[in-house]
Image: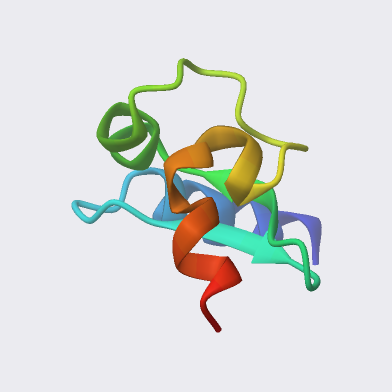
Length: 65
C-alpha cells in the first residue's frame, strides 16, 4: 500500500499540468505541484492555506455568489 501511495504522489507531483487538491468549504490547499505554485506566484509554502489567503483578489468573486 505504501508503495502505491508513493507512486501516486510522484505521478501527481510530476504531472505536466498545474493542479492542486483542496479540502472543505474554505478550500484549504492540501497539495499543489510546482507548476501550480509557479502559476499562483505565492512561493513554495501554500499547503495549509485557504485559496482566499493565497489569492485575496478572488474575494469579490466569492461574495457575489
